[in-house]
Image (cartoon, rainbow, N blue to C red; front, side, top):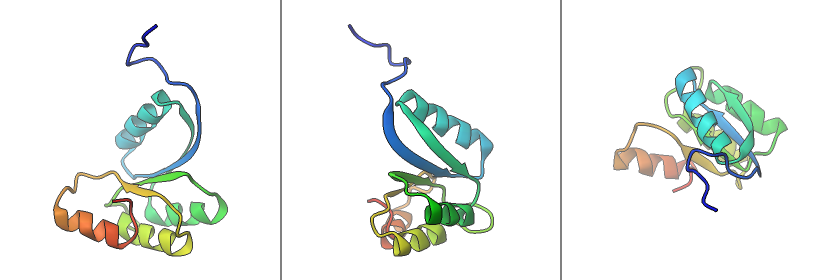
Length: 111
């Protein structure tokens, strides 16, 4: 039988963090992840909290916004990857310029 594209996927045992200060964006990505079967989602609203969370927990993937208060996503990613070289950081941002992509790769984000 075919599943409707809107039905929930089987549960997946991934531990995900989403660093994003916009509440609407937090809800949208959380809903998308839940529909993909991912339920272990930690949400933080600035880069400093993301760095701090990585000191006490290990995440399979980290979704990172670029522009946040306290500490931006670029600085947070650099600190996280310096301390945890196996971290998988993926930027979720409206910045699509090649210059941004290159800078993100330089600090260790997934390319």
